[in-house]
Image (cartoon, rainbow, N blue to C red; front, side):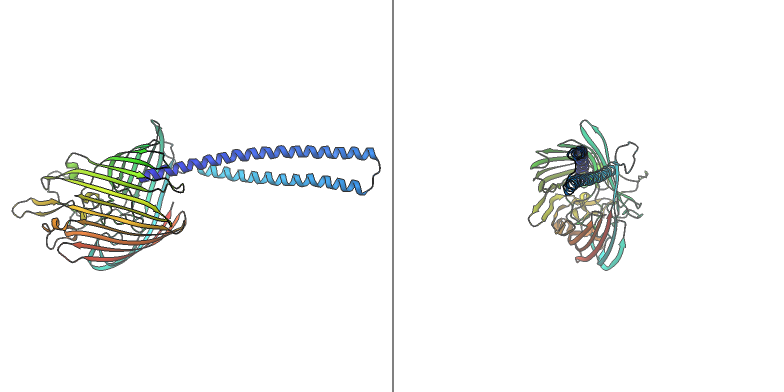
Amino acid sequence: MNSACAQSATQENLSQQIQKLTDAMARTQAQLEDSQRQLNEMRKQLMELRRQMAQSGSNVGVQPPSAPVSASSSSQAKPEAASTAIQDTIQDIRDRQAMQESQITTQEQSKVESESRYPVKVTGLLLFNGFVNTGAVDMAATPTVALPGSGSTGATVRQTILGIDARGPHLFGARSYADLRVDFDGSPASDASTTTYSGYYNANTTLLRLRTAHAGLQWEHTEAYFSLDHPIVSPDMPTSLTAVAIPSLAWSGNLWTWNPQVGLNQDFGPSDSRGIQLQAALIDVGDAPLSPPAPASGISTATPPSSAEQSRWPGAEARVELRGPVVNNDKNRDHLGIGGYFAPHYSTVLDHGFDSWAGTLDARLLLPARLEFSGSFYRGQALGGLGGGAYKDFAYKANSSSTGYYFRPLDDVGGWAQLKERLSERLEWNAAFGIDNAFADELRRYAVPGSTTYQNLSRNRTYTGNVIYSPSAYLQFSLEYRHLESSPILSAPASSNIIGLGAGYKF
């Protein structure tokens, strides 16, 4: 939804610029015609003045030499000087008109041609990341959990993002749009074991990975859409140029996972003033990364249904947002949101159903001295599919007397907060903290000695700070520090310091 709103704002700004340039051309043309009329009038006056002087000379006879020379030079100098000034003004107007026509041509030209003939724009971020991890982590380039062991150093360009934005026809009085984003952080081939976590899409064995996608119809105050994106109850994301493939503070209080959704937004009040927005959506939430392996069957299924899909009911989410007025005409505004989420699940492995739910609170506040506070907080159960719950929807362990499992959906609480300061248009710094905490008392009964960190993990915390410098609209550089603290139930906490460097070119 945020990408869709950002795309709408960009297109509106483009239309406004084209309209301004068109109006400027019309004014310039009018000025040019007026200047031409003035020049013609002055030429007529000059011709009339010369004719009168010629007649005066022939009628009066011999005049003192000084008088006619002075009058003639003076009378000729003034019109010639005026004529030169007018010619310079006309040339300046023509130069400005040529520049404006060039700008309009650049704005209106089609960069990419689509089969539908509607405008399509290719965007992206070519991103280089270097990293130094002082301790062991789960994924060297995009760490989310600290592990016991030594550190690592390296670099990657796999967080590079490629995007396509498209505008379509008007339908039922609404503007249609679509966009998608991919990156190159797909997981390598794996044996689908639950002893390792190689990324949220651990079934993806290709380099290219679909991140987000949106398509919808947008009226003045209403929007209907379908998307692959983070849940609407978690609308904001912490700022980072080194945590892109997996967003900053993921699995440390940021409910970020991309899931299919169908939704409706309704605004009340002027678009640039105080108002209320109501949001509702159906969501097909995925399974948590840590789930029991599916039993072998005679039917080979490349992608078995998730526990939410096996319940045969979609999840639902809703949010109410209070909005402040737009500040500085750049769509920045305060907001305060309250949301709720519910999704039934059924696991054939457990032969039992359970419910996933959450209550959320989010805020974004513009403060004096170019400061900005943002954050999101939640309390719920079985939130592994949304990016919480310490990677789990539930705790489980095998029943030694049968082929089944003991299990319990895990209660969870967490959130994140960030303070941003825009030192200038080109320089900003961000400081943030996030925590995800599955209830230790519930997890301890199901802890397995010698099992993986993920299965026994109860709490995950991240402290982070970064500086982002943008010398132009297309170049970005960042230096970031992160501190990860991961606390399993049956072993000592592990920590790692991460120093990251980011250099990006936007196109």
